[in-house]
Image (cartoon, rainbow, N blue to C red; front, side, top):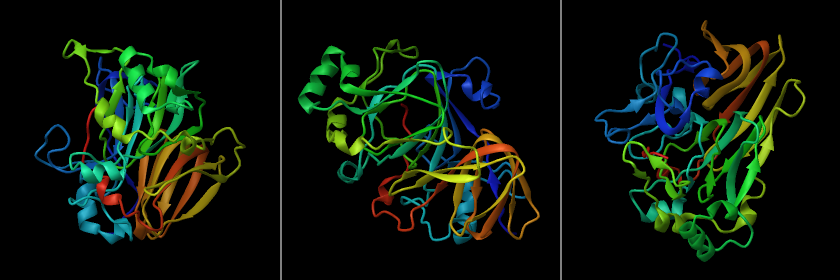
Length: 357
């Protein structure tokens, strides 16, 4: 059976900081009365990682002859037809990306994720590098990304103890279309009122340094901080974080490609098509498309399968497809995630942990 563009059933994750924008803005029906902070759009985790499950937790396919199968089963069965020369990660043969939507009704914790050096010395920790694309936000919303000039380990420790961490962070006012790259080691927090698409390595070792004195209703206490671990991971070289954001939708709506992120683990670009326009996109390696605006149909080379794609949906284009033809039913924009030509040597450390924010 030839492969075709694959869509997936999302997994909704309740978070104490979550809201309802995933339903009201993206049109995904959520469980009633629950604060949903994350919609996992493309995921692949081995047993024992998500809720101590004894089985793989992997995206169910939503369309075509493979509907009902898991992403992981297709990775195993089709191998290079799906992945081309892009290797899976970790000892379990995991798909090398995790794609989410995040709805922050409240501020997320101020946190950091480890780099490869820390992960290599701590087997329980796993590298995480990520990027956020701002899809919607409330008036005045902001996020935190990186440290103010001159902040040291000692001054940050003192700020954690006296509750003045916010003053030591770079606060960024957000706009729709903005993209923020967050390499491992970046101290950061997504701010209240923001709906974002997130592309990341498939791990989430998270070290919190500040949580806004929030009380977890499930325990009646503040959530645990991880100050000692975080201090070993935070990048205090602020200059390395300056060139961190770019804007996609602020530009003209002509058919085009806008580079957004280039990292050792994934590349991210924005694509536009105006109503009625068509584009042929070469594959040869897997691509992930995250629809952020409008509606299009996708045809794979050599298949009769026509796949509709609307805002809030995610598509995996298999390597064996060769090319994909896209036609815009109305003005549309999507994020295109691709893999670097040379796989980074640390990719094996970016695997298999899903922890709470």
